[in-house]
Length: 466
Ligand code: GLU
Image (cartoon, rainbow, N blue to C red):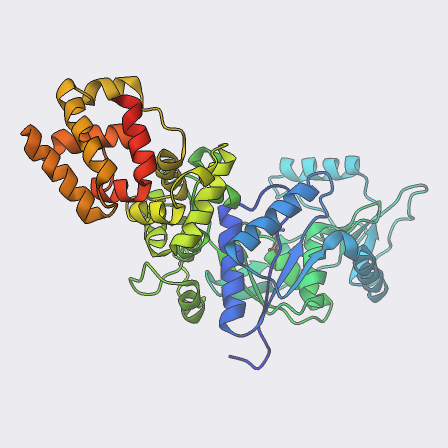
């Protein structure tokens, strides 16, 4: 590594929530900075005032904080840096690396149409571009000019993309693009350049939808005499079905993963493997990821989303999570459903029973709800399982349970005695018992369920059906 400290940035446009693709970009930029003891800068690119909203800014900040992607600097807001962009534009006009252009939109249309008719690529023809010995027209009265970058016309602009390899574009392909509109506002590609320069960004890690902007940005950086950062363009993420990831594929907003019961560490682990690999390792901590992360093992081909794998990772992290943390998550989810967990048994004990059987926190909450809500098993489920034989057995079990010591061994013994007394097999007692105490025929081991639910609730639930 060079001696220059690594500085990366994440530069979202706040026109919507933080989506999974943006989160992956943020994660890679964050991890690269962490890996090299550098800095991670958050920059909000809010110059598209028509589409940027404060809610979207908040959604992005929330998503990053949920994922634990902490920025060392920022958030910086481009709208607050307008004076700086204008200052640089003035300097460029002065230095001759930018110029005023008075071509009207109608004229531009006519130019393009003529180019198309000749089979050429439509582009600005440089009519206001100053050249040695060239006579420029007199500026038309009352027209506010745009400012164009006076780009190189010969040679190539090239960079060694850290993901895609060498990319070269002939400067003849690039026209002099607008860096400030007629009303003086700077354009997107220009603001990015000034920011990356001012913020000392060493590695631009971003989506490959920006590859086409890079040659223009490099040319402006060079015109400014700025150091050109290294670029790593990440390939896009496809949905499960191989098409571009979109709302059709379900959750695309990071916070929706929270709503849907994913743990942030599962999402982080999942995103880390979307286009990056460390051998065959699939399950690793954030810390481990930071230690391993490099740009050499990012695949240049598109990564495909795999919901099944995410669910598998989520199940893994739920199993690993502390019961107290899971109980708090479940309590929040129950509260949102209007269920008050205070009246039920310990949620920590309930989640301990279920944490290895669920793949998300909502499923965990569904099971916990059976323990804490005022349970009314569905009549058809009761009708199916609560036969007269079963009722008689549960009645005698109820008597035993009223007196038994409340622990798993004693509870299991009471069930076995009931089976023997009624000449029944385990499922003939356990299934109706499950239906009566939890409303469902399948639960974790019944003695454990009874133990957690507690004598008071078990007897009350039995009494309601007998
Ligand atoms: N604001 C751009 C976006 O949200 C990112 C620009 C960049 O990373 O250079 O797509």
